[in-house]
Image (cartoon, rainbow, N blue to C red; front, top):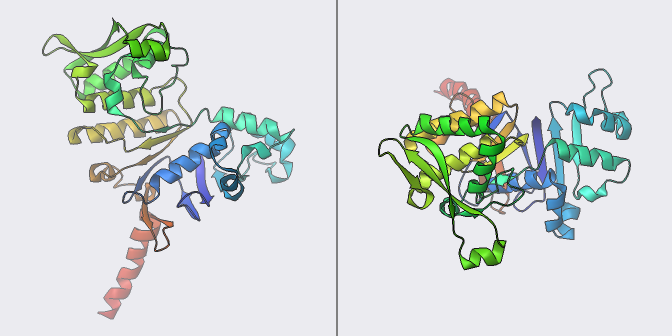
Amino acid sequence: MLKRIHIENFKSLKNVTLDLQRVNVLIGPNNSGKTNVLKALELSLNSHKLFNLSQSQKSRLLYNLEFNNIPKILIKYIHKDFSGLLNEATREIDIYTLKAPWARFNEPQGNLAFHFEKEFNDITLYFINPHLLKKSYPLLSGNQIVNEDASNLVAFSDFLRDQHPDLFQKIQSDLSMCIPELTQIRFENVTPTENDVKIFGDKTFKRLGLFDKTHNTVFWSDELPEGVLYFLALLCIIHQPNLPKLLLLEEPERGIHPRRIKEVIGFIKQLAYEKEIQVILTTHSPLVLEEFAETPESVFIFDKNEEGATSIKNLQKDVISLKMQNEPKKAWKL
């Protein structure tokens, strides 16, 4: 699990540090740098995505990632390549520094880069687009994971039903628990448009629907509220068979009815501890923030200074603790 991240020279992140928990929430105004932190992490743990940066950006970019421990699969590679940093007693390494680009690794260090990235899977920054969920989708190869915008929700769900029926059933039961009238996910073959054929070729297209037991009918995706589809997409993301060790979510409350936000955040927290993954999410919702009232150390407040650089405060360390320290002084002056 990531314990601390330090990022320099990435967009508005000139020099920032975050001490992370199992589940973390980033709050603050638009354009304050919340998404930049997620994008920086996405780049640092996905070597192929660094190539989208210019060479000047790569040369200036610095990541320091500190872990509670290093995944066991990497120990022999760290011992081989960085034995001077390895604690022989605990077989753990405290700090592992990443300087972009990943291409800096040459053999034998290349083994470390490969297995490090393999261990963390393909870290994806999810920003669900509910409008895309209303459309039919082709059954293509490579739909074992949910796209970053969840546009392949139909194909992924169809794959899950056939290959991982236990996870498919779990998604249905979670959906029904929050929206009792919706009990089943259904699929139907559809005729692709000419434009679809031009783009994807001669493929099978399907659309997705939800069975409503109250009305005894199936409501297809183009008839369903975007909030319901968004919630379904979120359930698919957190129940993927190969869930990344680090899950990045942009505004998971988007499109969700306020009464359902508690359940959504509850699902995310439960998943994090059960699956031993780490979650970092952004939000603009005070209802989401309420779900972290008992863990203020998980909340990070973003803002920008006069130079346009991002500043970050931890709610517990930089706000609550300081306020408690200052209150006795104020009382004494009175």
